[in-house]
Structures are given as C-alpha cells and as structure tokens.
Length: 125
Image (cartoon, rainbow, N blue to C red; front, side, top):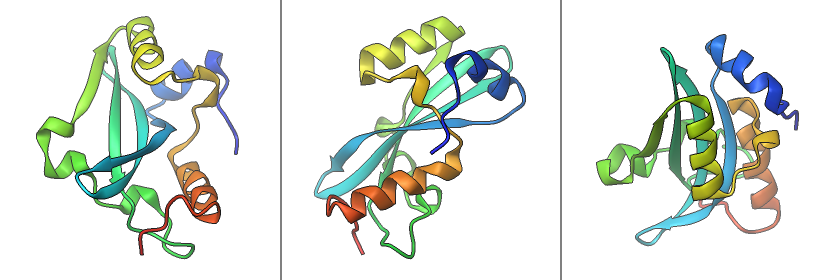
C-alpha cells in the first residue's frame, strides 16, 4: 500500500483528493463494521469523518467504498471534526490514535479489507 507522507497530506487535500485510513473493526448493534477515517478539505477547513462501513463483502466484492454505512442510517453515527489542519490532526490522534504517516488514497481501503478477510476477521457475505 502506498502511504502519503505527512508533509504531502496538505497538497493532496488542496488538489481535491480525499485521503483515508483504516481505524478498527467495530460493531453497530449486531453487525460488524469496517471503521475508517475520511480526510478532506472543504474550503479553508479540514474535515475528518469516521465512516462505519458494514461488513458486506467477500474476496470478490471488496470495494468498501460501495458498502452501506452506519452513517447513512443513523445521523448519530456521523462523527466528524472540522477546523484548522493542526486541530483536526490533534483530534485524530486523540480520538483514534491515528498515525499521520499512514493515510492513503481511498482505493487502497479494499487492500486492508481483503487482508482482514484473509485473517478471518471480516467477510460478511
């Protein structure tokens, strides 16, 4: 997986690219979730959102960006923080113990999902 160096995060966001990072395997009631952070720039503010994708895939259907999310079903699950870059980075470190050196393009989320399937931790289908 190709990670974006911390010093290039701002450049990627200014170019309109979203960045992502896997956080944990979670649960929403009785359903397992693949929880990840979406980092984006909205105007002059940075925005970090915890996305809770339902474990709906398998080795073939593994595009986590296409899965239904708890965020869509329940507005209380829409946890996000907006603000200056350093404030958002601090929130990510405090809330999720995020390593700023491990952000990547959204397309790489499926690699992590497949790794978790291979280790029999996910694979809801």
